[in-house]
Image (cartoon, rainbow, N blue to C red; front, side):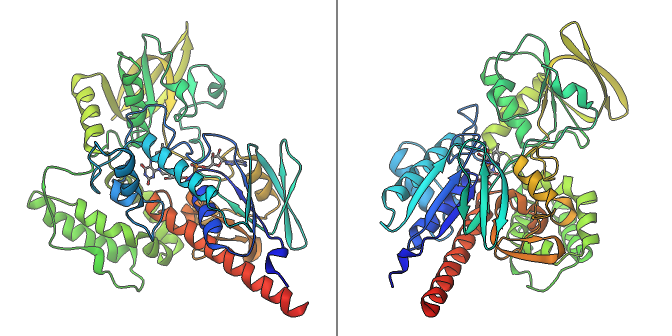
Length: 473
Ligand SMILES: Cc1cc2nc3c(=O)[nH]c(=O)nc-3n(C[C@H](O)[C@H](O)[C@H](O)COP(=O)(O)OP(=O)(O)OC[C@H]3O[C@@H](n4cnc5c(N)ncnc54)[C@H](O)[C@@H]3O)c2cc1C
């Protein structure tokens, strides 16, 4: 019996980095025939919001040397840069533009399509998946504009959700023309007036928005507000690196939050006292953070989120030095005024918004023409406004992950764990919706590993299934 005569349909919902890199692995490594269906509605196919930015100068926030789409080919991105942009510095420690990375992904995808083994095929749907129903062992995916697709396995690669409505913003104000809910779309940085702007948040998206506004000719004051104030750090600081301790040799057994903090604080203090940079300490911890998180108790996870998340994000999400310098110049000139505090009230008056801020205990009233929500992707699947996820939650096909973040799934295989601890064998999740399970599930270095793992699990599953069919035929 010819194994390729047993058709296997695999659907990937989402055509950003995770969707297409998983697809490339499936197409490259499966030699016995699959029909791949990729359903994507939203930003440019293959690029997602991250790599189709509104402003061309925005840089990657991970250096070139760690941005290969493939864990087993670590130089792939640098080789591509050298072939396509030979006149720029493409060293592993520099940061290329996000647009270049988007080009790299699209070219990687096109190359995979051109080299598909004859037994495999791909259909891409520019459509929204609304629901999935289960019929015996197969899944039926309902699309807005196309007939339903029947699939043996489905991968949820739905990616970055819009930020949640922040504290201080009344739900009725979210419909105002002054409120910009999606910071990754170009309307938030174009057609500005000569009034000030308020950004909610003080992280990497805030930096992108400031640079986008300024590069579009905006010259008024940009205010920002967040509970922890200005917290953008450059990727490298000018202090000597602290190298007396590294987490790289961390034992594989459980480490409690208390032990972790004790070790970290001890070395942080020594580094601070001697005027050295703790970045090497943070960077050495990063590769272990998923494993540490997996071993934390629920209480430890909650404590980490409550007390340490802002600090961890401040030191872990850092800006390329060039971008950091641009923001710093604006801050020093007063054109960028970050506030550590919260929004007290927002009133629309004669075409502008009057906003009262509480900045470290002091009330400050500003008048702005727009308020841009840059608080980062919302990890709560019930608030993401994604009809597909809402429908799946309602039927308990998926449930929220630990600490209410993302989707509950098996950390090794990405298989969805539904209500009643039921491990699904045909529904997978990848990307930022694994945040509750893994904590760090955002950047390319961890996502490329997930993409490869899920593809391998699915391919192995297909082979086992086919052998079973052949043996019992
Ligand atoms: C602005 C920004 C910059 C970043 N920069 C970096 C960086 O420099 N380096 C780094 O390592 N990481 C970076 N990241 C992290 C980034 O999240 C990942 O690198 C990666 O882009 C995530 O890809 P994804 O496929 O999971 O999600 P996405 O790129 O968001 O793709 C998901 C796609 O699925 C679609 N979709 C969702 N639901 C449905 C549905 N029901 N039906 C059909 N389609 C659907 C969406 O519209 C979207 O097109 C950045 C993130 C952001 C937001």
